[in-house]
Structures are given as C-alpha cells and as structure tokens.
Length: 278
Image (cartoon, rainbow, N blue to C red; front, side):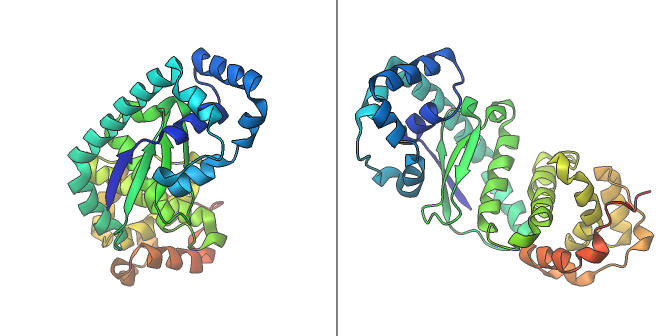
C-alpha cells in the first residue's frame, strides 16, 4: 500500500465554508462571503464531490468565492497550519510505513496495489469524506484527535483505506463487516505495530458483536486452543475456549473469506443476549 499526503486549496476552502466553523475567524469569513456573494456561495454546496473526483484537474465554473478566500489572511494562516499537519502525518507514515505494510498484508491477506491520496484539511474540521467509486482514490482527511498520537492517526487512516477496499462487500451485513474491520485494523494491526494490546479500542456500539466474533477471529489468525489462552490474556477478552471447535480452514482464507464465513454462519456465531464469556 502506498499513501501520498497532499493538500488541495479548493477542497480546503469548500470545507471551511460548508463545515462547522472551528474559530471566530472562519465564522467571520463565512458571514462576509454570505453578505457579498450569497448566490455564488450556495452554488458551491455540492462541489466537494467534483473536487474529490478530479482533485488537481478541478476547475470551478465560478471562482469568485474561491478567489476571495484565497486572498484572505484567514486562509493564509489556516493553510500554514494544514501544511504543518500534512508534514506531521508524512513524518509518521515514513516512520511506520514498512511495518504497517508488512503486518497489514499478514492480517488481511490480499494486496492493496493502488496509491491512495490523502487530501489533508485542517484537523479541527474533524471530518473524513471519500467516494467508494472514485478511481483517483482520493480521501478528504482532517481529524481533531490525529494530533494526539501519530501512530493512532495512521491506524485510523488505514482503517478508512481498507474500508474503501471492501465497501461493496456483504453490504447487507454491514455491522459484521464493520466489526471485523475493527478487529483487523483498530485492534490487531495497531497491537502489532504498537507492541501492546489495543483490543480495548474501537467502536463502542460494536463491542458485544466483536466479543462474539473474537474466538473465530483468533482461528483466522491461526491460533490453536493453547494459543487462544495467550491471546485472551493479552487482549483481556476472555471466553470459554473449550466450547469452540477450531475451524482450521479459517487460517487459510483472506479477510473476504473470513467475512463470508461469519456472515454465512451468523445464526450460530452471534448470540448477543447470551455471551459465552468466562
């Protein structure tokens, strides 16, 4: 997997104008534009789709508002902060890229050959947007908590990229797919790279479902019953492993195969009202 961290002025302007204001300067800028160019402002409201689709090739039909923002001191200051954040993400990717790619390949077992373009916007915008059908693989990225932990920021990005790859798979079982993706990236990948268990992290609304899937997830990782005990102790996710028959074939499939197994056998795997824990 290859990732490029880029910026796009048009995308940044669009997000500043149509996402919630994160400071008084941005709010004042929006109000000025609304007073001067209300019609032009409104016509821009869906242009983020075109920017994401065409990125460097995007040319607005009317650049009046864009040029007004480009010439403002507010935009100049924000752009410097965005560039600083882009360099922060690039630095962390340079540090962890090799290990992440190695472990990711081992976990998901299918190749991701395309280059993804992370179009960095201001982290305080706290938003992520992508289109699953976009051939350019562009993702608009600006998350407030990225600045707290560079590795964790990368894990969130990788989660989004893998979600992009499997977005059209087993759509009718979205919660199972999301839970498996959480186990694979938020938990297992992060655990391997950080060298300590991260199985306490992830989406809270998926916690019970992930507990049901966890024994089979360990089988997918190739664990026998003895190794399951070590994993349970590491991750603090106990279950009565004696009640489970090892599905040896799971260790031979890729992530798509594991998703299929869980979806096809959910009647037997998922019993949220009767959790089999120790």
